[in-house]
Image 1 (tube, helix red, strand yellow):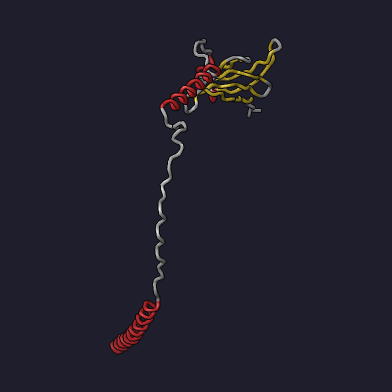
Image 2 (cartoon, helix red, strand yellow; image 1 turned 30 degrees about the vertical axis):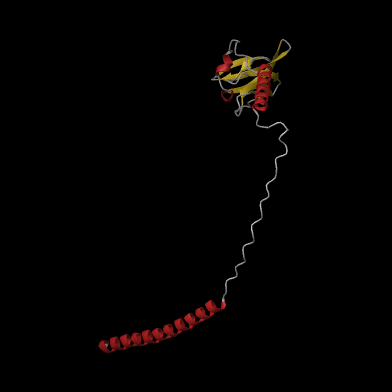
Length: 185
C-alpha cells in the first residue's frame, strides 16, 4: 500500500508540473507579443538644437580711464591698508612691556568668582584659582589673553581681553566671570 501511495503522489506531482509548465509558455508568448507592439508604437521625440548665437565683439572704450590693475593703483591700496593696520595696532595692542601679574599665568576657565566685597570704598572681587583665593580690583590684569578688569559688582566681574583675529590684527573681546553659587548647604 505504501508503494501505491508513493506512485500516486509522484504521478500527481508530475501532472501538476505539466499543467503549470503549459500555462507558463503561453503567458510568455503573450507578453512578448505585447512588448513588440508597444515598441513599434512608441516613437522618440527629439527637439532640434537651436542655432548658436553669433558673438559680436565689443570695443574697449575705457582705454583713457585708470587701469584697475596698474602698479600705481596697487601700491596706493597696499600703503592705505598698511597705514590702517598701523593705526589700529597703535590704538589697540597688548602692553607687552609691563610686568605680568600673578593671575595672568592662568586661563580664565581655571578661575571662579566666589565673592565680592568693598574695601576702602572700592569693589573687590574674590577669585579662586587652584584652591587659592585672590583679591582683584578694577584695572588688574588676569587671564592669558591680556585681560584687564573693567568693572566689578556683587555678582560678576567684567574684563576686556585683547586677542589677535585671523588676519593678525588685535581686537577687543569683552568677557564676564559670574559669581559661582555654592551647591552645598
